[in-house]
Length: 79
Image (cartoon, rainbow, N blue to C red):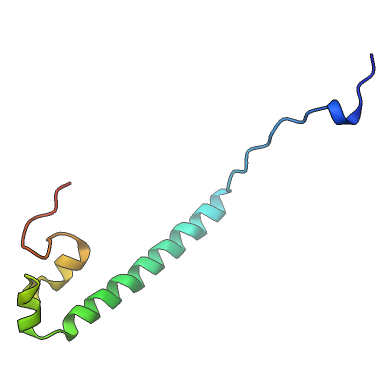
């Protein structure tokens, strides 16, 4: 019985990312989240107090709202 190259099946090798690749990816994600957070805080700080009140925030609540600790309507975040 002879086997031809076309009938030989290789086992599939899973495409696993290495530890270094995961570390770089995690660092990049953290950097991106930091920039987005800072931009959101800066945008909200540019609003006047009347507009902030309209969306249900006080100036002292900006960071908490961006971090998701409070919602714009003053309700705590459910975990």
